[in-house]
Amino acid sequence: MSFLKLDGIKKAFGDAEVIKGVSFAAEKGEFVVFVGPSGCGKSTLLRMIAGLEDVSQGTLYIDGKNVTFEEPAKREVSMVFQSYALYPHMSVFENMAFGLRMNKQPEDQIKARVLEAARILQIEPLLDRKPRALSGGQRQRVAIGRSIVRHPKIFLFDEPLSNLDAELRTQMRVEIAKLHSNLGATMVYVTHDQVEAMTLADRIVVLRAGLVEQLGTPTELYDRPANTFVAGFIGSPKMNFLLATVTATDGNSLQLSHPAFAGGTLQLRRPAASEVRVGEKVSVGMRPEHLSLDPAKPLLSLSLDLQENLGGSTQIHARAAGEPITMVVPGRPDLSSGDAITAGIEPNNIYLFDESGLAIKG
Image (cartoon, rainbow, N blue to C red; front, side, top):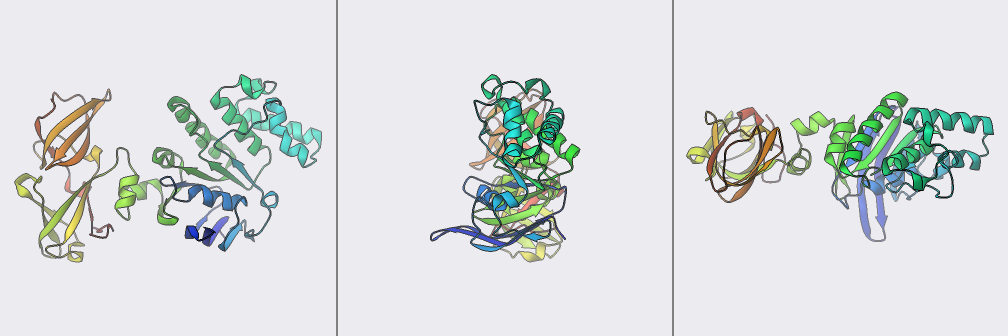
């Protein structure tokens, strides 16, 4: 039996259906991330797991128990919000102990749990401070500690790092990964940042407009995206796409035409080539990190717009017959705006998608 299971979950606000039938299951101790653009329904879905939003249709199980209509306090889940929501007049210790005191837990047990959580989060020297004397990262640790002391069955995180600066986000991301490893707890994490999703998740649920586009491990989503939406969302910088025309196919290979291709055409061996017909349009997907300036593997004729020096690598922005192309190459190539350049790529790093946006396998 799955530890967390959503079966056909729907949510409507009046006539507006924002969650349109989501089903998935998570095992005990798994770290699941909901990711997607703003408005896709990921926070609403998390709030339904917490019991803060009613389920319009479907069934929700936690640890084998149907909790679809259970009160939030009875679900044994704990939520960490985007805002820290700390009581400003209370010390760190009092903030972390508050929920336990409301549940009338014995004082010795409260103290033991708070000290245990403080040790795990390395905030023991901060227990006597008020929130105003803490940095953003320290406040977020206290908010997480307030969840830990409750010993919940599931931790829920709603974009907990979005208020932090870039350096603190990276640091806290590492801390949350360590926390999951140390506690072995089931965690569900919401973010619009696909880097957070890729680095934290055991599995990722990619959402768009209230539906699951794909569910899988970070590697599966990166290597085998189900469609152009997932392919363009997972990966930074995002995948490049060129719309090409199928000019020939024999079942095992196909020839594609685009004015930016070296020689005007691209020949690819694909076992699934029989899925497309001559004259159809296909999207050719290329990740920026897979493209190179190697003249021995010519694929695209490009015109350079600009380049960004990233230190150990360079991000190149160019045009392929007027369409934007991004590349990430090692070092600092000696190039200038307007230069004609040639980009190459290994054939097995090229992705193909049909006219509907679905991946052409093989």
